[in-house]
Image (tube, rainbow, N blue to C red; front, side, top):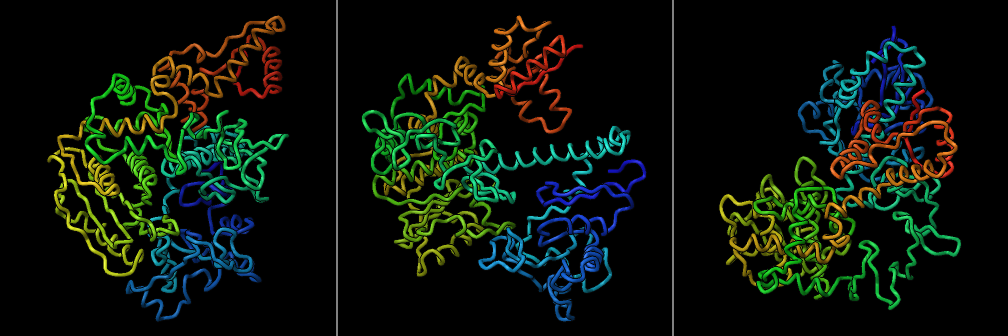
Length: 634
């Protein structure tokens, strides 16, 4: 990217693609430009990947000879001895940097605040390793570091500039000062959009409690600023919470910052009605839960018995199923289990001949664990999205996602996914037993990679001799069907409850409906027949903050029309039908560049005949803290 006769732009990015620094080069790009950027940072990154790593390390160290920014070994991973070079050439050398994944327990002096290490390495990516003929620079290969395997996308800069080329025409026609301002603004919106999408993807897997802390890391719970104050990830502002993570009103009552209302909770964090019954704040209705925090009705309905799931459906249940599986309005929240909000599109996996999606599979397995708790059975369920990361190329440590008392659990459930097929591994640590259930081949041992993984895991969980229990009389899915996910849920339910399998492949249509009803009836956000009808959806969409602000602004105009000189056109979106309304809101949310954002805002515009009227209107909206968009015709 360039303007006039400059040397273009230099960017420093993380592997995710977020731009951390941006510099306009007055001359052709050189290591000097990136040294300028890195030396301007308060904390220089521990690993820098550059096309000409040796030149960058040498130039930077010559600029600051007293501290040598790239050290030890001039930014190489090891001392460039002949032995190390030969081992590297033979492919027998690996250099572990564990602090890239887990911060040092005792940080180095002047260490990076995220890693705790004061070491700084300048390395080549795989596409530019041949840029140097110096044999010592073999020790700058990123492939030598196992912690970087599969985590470095060295092409993010090229991908960014490929996207930016469409802006070349109007940027290069601008004055230098305008060019700088516009470039900075474009990159800011690019970063904001990228971070938002990344956070949404993480929250989809781990729940809405995930947020981004001051270092840009995804964390569970509330992020904190540099003073330790809690930041509400749902609102993105400083919440001013107390030491327990709850804000308080003037009377000392706890306020849920994620919902913004007075919770009136008891000492245990649960609200109560006038009879002292516990209210589940995540669902907003009376739960009637017992001492285990699990509804006793769930245990009754979620029973490993044909009498439980093979029952005639009432008219109300049939209506609930029809509404949940309706292909319209996919984004409507239907149920919530823990931190996971299930939308209507998630339930479509229970439809005929549909594959089960991992999000709803996780929820069903958690429901089994909750029902087992009432019977005194302690069950741990591994997240289906996490289990797959234990395999190559990620090779994550399973124990990072386990509770400390994992070895004392009665049953461990591991849902496994290979392209197009679900399987289940069940472990009983107290009995040193392991089961592998594969609905397409019940007598087999499942996937070889997973079998090796779980076999190694047993030794770490509970050392000793384990028994791989041979399956007998295990139901099998029909050839060519996509019922493997439903079979996995039923295997888990029956093994946890200690019951004999009494279902067959012919029962799958009935069981699909039953699982759908279990989630709707016990974990519904609201009554589904109230929320998912077109009338209910229209009301729900109109409660969107942007539309509510627009409605309040319209009320002000109607009450103060005598103060206006000319006419005002209200936002078109306030008169849209439901489908168009949802489309407009989606376009506004998904706009990822300035041009798209301008187009997306058009239906939300107040159009004034005179500028004076618009300025008066804006002043009133600012006082009332209303978010509006407006223009004038003059």
